[in-house]
Length: 88
Length: 272
Image 1 (tube, each protein chain N blue to C red):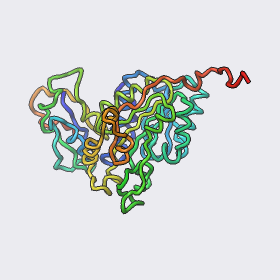
Image 2: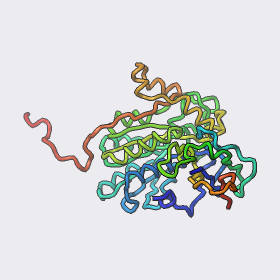
Image 3: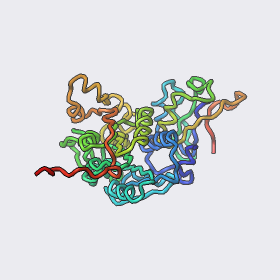
Image 4: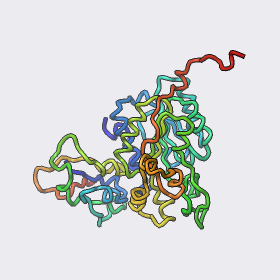
């Protein structure tokens, strides 16, 4: 599994950057449709849950996100989706 | 249960400021509630007035939004009239400790079966950042522009002294410990009190050179001390709190009987 940021809810507080012990996230550079610099998942392969599908560990980003914007997404089959961001 | 079965997705994104700690508490509470296996139909959420008291409005359940400071009073009445319901109270520091301070102390004393979650953001966040009873010493706020001369209230220690069954304090940095404590407090009978020291970047951090939510979380990380460690080192933990430190941990876990379980005993002074 990998963390994915829901751009509808993210308010760009960057708490996920602070909470993540593996530096999976980085600061956003593009404005989201809501008007915030939403964080981006740049290194999902570093995540503790990269190879896991159940019994997830850590979860500091999911629990720490104050806007409920981060959720677990399954790993994509192909290498197309580089960032785990869901647009919309 | 999924997160948005528990919370009302139609109301998202919520009104809290970017970086506010209330959302973190909502995540942790959802985890604890999900693990304990309670039913939403059988649970009532009571809140007073304040930023943190808006949380029950986002939950897909019955909620009572009461007058300022009277959340514990209303919840006590609700629990005593309908003992089959589970009652959870969400309040803030101004609601619980300042205007409702006596309800809080007497709720602890009566030991009614309530679960109280107090989100302490060290300031009156909703009304513009006035100094509250929990603003640490020498911290700025809009009413104390030269630093707060007063010393803060220690809500968790008051609950211990007043006789609550379960008392814990964590910060929003300690999310896993907070979830565990919330679960323990939901599972226990009696008056269970969990205080969460939360960040308010808009009104507290901005005036104290911590305008970023992550700077406040860093402050929590640096200044939080485990209460048992402070006790083992023979430091008075009240002094730590007065010096701007935050003692965290599980403060007390005891089994006093609840108010509605109490049987009439032998009256004192019979032999006279």
